[in-house]
Image 1 (cartoon, rainbow, N blue to C red):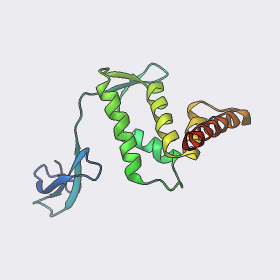
Image 2 (cartoon, rainbow, N blue to C red; image 1 turned 90 degrees about the horizontal axis):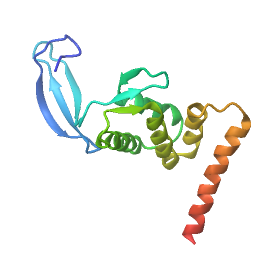
Image 3 (cartoon, rainbow, N blue to C red; image 1 turned 135 degrees about the horizontal axis):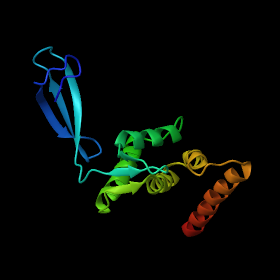
Image 4 (cartoon, rainbow, N blue to C red; image 1 turned 180 degrees about the vertical axis):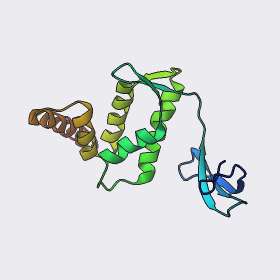
Length: 159
């Protein structure tokens, strides 16, 4: 692992342990050249995934980009970061275990919508407004009606 401070290629692992989410390994490292200390995370990758954009262009799947989508939708919402990490890891696990190496951005977007619906209604509407390209206030009203219908079904099940 290259040192982020001096770019030396000879860094040493001082400590390894499972990360909080249980899906990665946290490694504490030190650079013998400059003494810099830093942390890396190692995750299992079953296969390399390609994302097919709406334009037809193909790009390498990026976990950080997926995480950023969640964080934008969840900005200023009080949602535990571990829950977000689990949602992202769950989506990636489903994508990798699907057997497909090429996934459409639309399929990923639908999975993000489902995960956000379970995490936070406001974040769901925020993401849906961009993903579904809301153009009128009625689009927001329809999304909110879907959430209210879901809440009604859940409260009936609680009785």
